Image 1 (cartoon, rainbow, N blue to C red):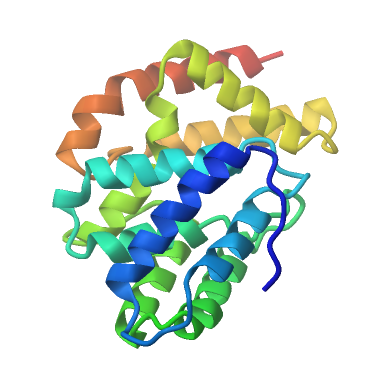
Image 2: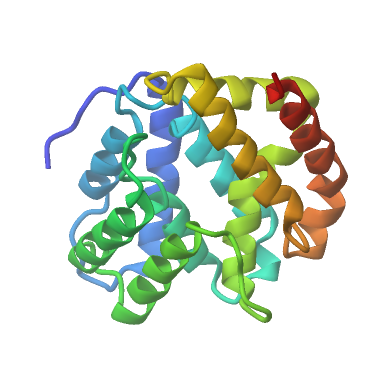
Length: 221
């Protein structure tokens, strides 16, 4: 696979190092060099239609997955899923998670990742459609919490996140966006628990509910 330039070359380089280290642990001995696979993923995460689902989001999810690694049954499977969870992303398509999971199922075996780890990573990618990890699904809990950690950021960080989401959906008229976004926010607020791990609940739970309510109130005409 050819290399491609990335908008944030320092972040891309740091992420590629993390990918190479991860594959060095997970892939079978004698597997192909991991860098070309990582570079292709970084190219995907750098596509021009992205405003929130960018290299920065990937790095943030990986950071929280690392922080919650002790909660996972297979932290490296979670990390692989983080790399793939929005690798296919088109704002006007509804099957991004499924297409991302299929990409993982195709690429990871080529990179030398064992079948069981590939299957678990793909399952976790599909789980991000709902972020509802079943009781006892420790890997699912960690990935879901890492992906939703942005909701529990500072008011400034959350405002930047919400603005980036709106930019990704700039093709949607204001009224339709408000209705759709409000429905998503209510769905999140209605979940019995937004975060599945105790650590994420303690760290992000209260701020996330405050942020979601503030955005929901701001969307009301």
